[in-house]
Image 1 (cartoon, helix red, strand yellow):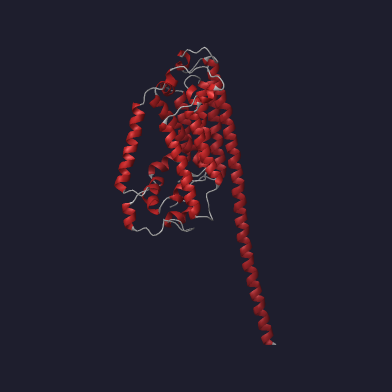
Image 2: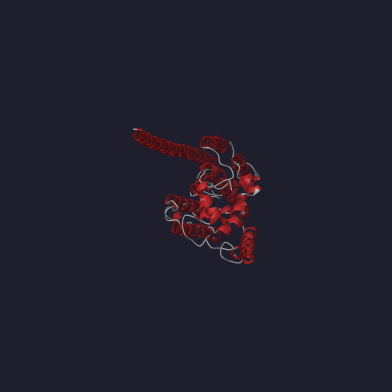
Length: 377
């Protein structure tokens, strides 16, 4: 249970002692017969397997995207604002995540009116989903195969903007609070306590994975292949979101984790990622020739040259990345200061309670001495 912070342990153990709710009164038969959605376990497992198989089949059989193999038309305002994609494999999961979040928040707030979910977390979660939507469905997606600079904006959004916002919403905490005890015990906690999860969530491993994916995708055949093959492109996006969440999770530190790092190490953890991002951006910016033949071979009569476009991409990665890390460092420092203030307030309260006990003992001693003197006289 060490992974669960103190304020959640009562929820994990007993289903929420802070307020009434359907968590209570479940017996072993309910645990054996039900699953997260109230389905029988066997049916729930079949649903998961069939859903995963359908999504996997779609990804494998997905054709190449014309936006990657063809040339997007010259962007003209305001027509370019309407160049949105409508991919149900992206829209439906994002919509389901937003609806599920709002439902979970409403349920937790109804159960625990004295300890509701902060509204700032809902804003952060929905903002993170909105950034993913913009990155993958807006005109950014339409032009990412034509301009490297637009593709870089997409990568920055998926690694440096959406993941920290989702981490700030503390989704694991909400999941633990809204889930029934049997669901936590059988599905969530085994994952959080698993050996694989402990390894990939270690701050050092998460830091290396984040840097490795960024360098590996930009300086390997993977990037070129992602521009031609939609399946590889989707895997690239999934990798960016995954390593982004793994990296920002310990930096934000709101959710329970197998590894809790103190605030000074969080500052160092984020700070050390900044020069890595700068070196990668400068490597792209200072290249004397285009790095990816895709952007050279496509024929377009508008926009910057492939080399100039690549320099813009490197500059965007440099500026936006370093600004993001600086803001993150400032946020960690402010959180550090607030944590110290809360710790100081708790210490002051404890000292004041101890002083009050000493004063009470002194008063009782004085009263006893007074009674003894009066009885002697």
